[in-house]
Amino acid sequence: MSINNIDELGRREFIANAAKACLGVGLMPMAGSYIHNSVKALTPGARPAKARHVIYLNMGGAMSHLDTFGPKPNNPDIQGPVKSIPTSADGVILSEYLPLTAKHMHNAAIIKTMVTSQGAHEQASYLMHTSYLKRGTIVHPTFGSWVSKLSGTINRTIPRNVKIGGGGGGAGFLEAEHGALPIGDPKSGLANSKMASYLDDSKFGNRLAMAEKLNTNFSTQYQQKQVRAYSKLYEDAVKLMKSEDLNAFDISQEPQMMHDLYGTSNFGQGCLLARRLIENKVRYVEVTRGGWDTHDNNFEAVSMNCGGENGIDQPLNALLLDLEMRGLLKETLVVLTSEFGRTPNINGRDGRDHWPYCFTAFLAGGGIKGGTTYGETDDQGRTPAEGKPIKPEDLNATIAYNLGLPLNDVQYSPSGRPFTLAHNGEPLMDILA
Image (cartoon, rainbow, N blue to C red; front, side, top):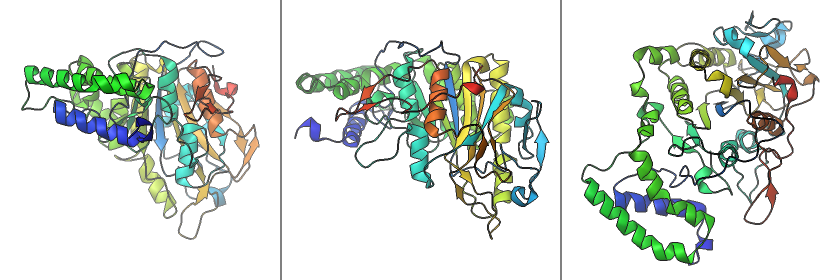
């Protein structure tokens, strides 16, 4: 069988199983998705980078913009029982469900005119994460993979792209090394990252040597970039296993006061892990928090999703405060958004349905013009009324531009088609400092 006929998942499964069998480790759930070759820090975009890192908070299920970052206090029929509150930025209001986040608006901006062409979760999430429509003939790289590819390495031991909670994060047609390292439970750290108890250094070294010998003919025969990427699996996995950087994934090393600050929920602990990873020079970290598909009992659900021990308000407040106190906020861009919004009209089940025609994005930290909002919706929060509609690819272009990444850098798929990291997106200069 030709290697060209082996699909990507098959390659990954083979390498993962080989590593586990030969080396006694299961370090790589994605078998090479975070093992990276040395790359040059590519030529920056139109301006020097204002941020070096991204923490992307993905609100899976479609967060209601009206009940969080885009309330309509003058239209009670649309707003329902949710009140608005002032923030630390003059004239900017948020939902009453986000009182802690409101204290950080002087460091943040809100885009009120986000729109998307997709109204189904899977397709809309794919578009948000890749800037391209989902097709059956190609898998596009996720935005974190583009960041990994184009940003250059700061710490050569630790991965550049990490995804905490949720699925996806693949490298698409880019080298597998740029795919996200998946972390299921932030409290468990990087699973299977220790040498098996039945191995010692000598046995482990012998197995590495055996694996390298077995791979020699194969690697020589198939001089392809994906094969070369996989060939570094053992070397880089062992490097990470023996490195102090492995501690970056262990949030148990944080003092109890930090756990209390972020809260004990998976999302809260995921945000704490994200901060640790940024401290250790990971370029891109995504943390997913689901539960936003509020077709029923929207107001009760959004209240719980924002407040209380499982809500987003406490962790987001903790993350922004923690980054600022450590001097990291000025070089870290924090983004919180969703795949689309929810209907202004309240349905018969006290819920809100899918609404791709308008939603919000919250951005804070490095390179952001704090205390600003962009655009405005009509009095019902249905469609943009002031300012241009901002599409997913525009948001991604804005993030990339802020990172100093080259928006016109072309990467080619296996079929020879050209792609760029934000498709045809244009940066939104109005919210950038």
